Length: 97
Image 1 (tube, helix red, strand yellow):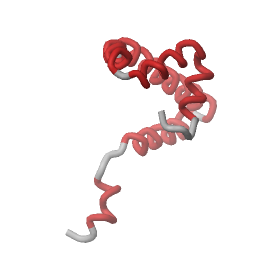
Image 2 (image 1 turned 45 degrees about the vertical axis):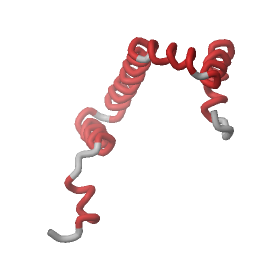
Image 3 (image 1 turned 60 degrees about the horizontal axis):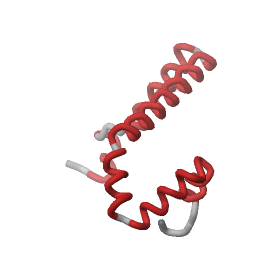
Image 4 (image 1 turned 90 degrees about the horizontal axis):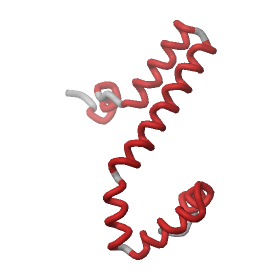
């Protein structure tokens, strides 16, 4: 059996480690510029997919929370009026929301 804590990372498959391995392999095979373009394209495509998923799947839940929770309703209205900058400030704020 051995040390379970030491072997924990070698037997589990972690998404970021596998992604990094694929990126390094692509860098060796394709070269630096093609790998950068490929990785940047996939990162942006993944971000757009996540944004569209949250827009379509979580809209109903956000509307229900806005009706039920006054704090969430105020935060939501502030972000709607303030735009991305307000969302960034709220996200990076040390004050609890």
